Image (cartoon, rainbow, N blue to C red; front, side, top):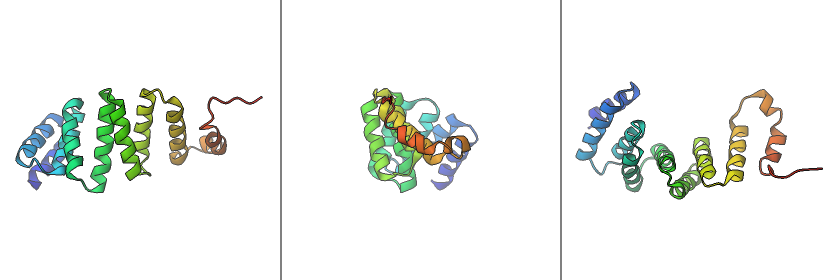
Length: 161
C-alpha cells in the first residue's frame, strides 16, 4: 500500500489530480478503514472541485482517527468544504473544533472568518481577521499601527467625538 499511497501523493504534487484521485479511490476500496487514505482521498476530490464527494471521506477519516498534523488538515478541509457547499453551521462547528484543538493555526482561524462572514457575523469575522493579520504580518507599516488595529478590532462600529 505504501508504494501506491506515495505514488498518489506524487501525482497530486505534479498536478495530475485525476490520476491521483483514481489511485486514492482504489486505495480506499482496498483499505476502507485507513484514516490517512480516506483523508487523502477527500483532499483529492477537493482538488478536482468535487467538494460534495470529499465530505464522506473527510468525515470518515476524522471519525477513524488521524495523527495530529493530518487531523489539523482534515478539519480545515472539511470545514472549508462545508462552507463552499453552503453548510455554514456545519462549517462553523468543524472550525470551532479545529480551533479548540489547534489554537495556533491561523489558517483555521482565517477560513473560520470566511464562514462567519457567510453567517452574517461580520463583526466577529473582521475581528478575527485583524487579529490574525497582526499575529502573522511582517509588514512594517501595519506593525507600526499594531496597537491601534488591535484596539479597534472589536470596536469597528463605535465612533468617538
